[in-house]
Image (cartoon, rainbow, N blue to C red; front, side):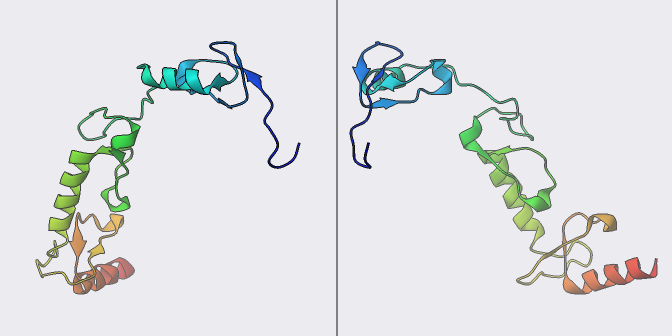
Length: 141
């Protein structure tokens, strides 16, 4: 019962053989107990229906590529859910275009593009001067 001692042999849930090297089965296999290495490899080779989550689809196009191929949208995009890779790339490209010029005065934005506050009802990025003007309008209102 030491740190490097031998493992206790357990019975495989598939072939019922005693084995000291066992693994836990995947949820999709619907097996109780443990599985020996031979059965584990055989089960891995068989196609099994994937347990799908209803949230595993793109919020813009509705594609269902699966949980591994979905991307979390950036906070500035105000999207709830996931995006597939093509929709994510398209959204990011459009976002980068918005970062080039101020949406209020069309001045070229520098290194820091400021995202307008929600209460200003401005979609896009604004320059430092327009930010100050918008802030002063909010303080006087």
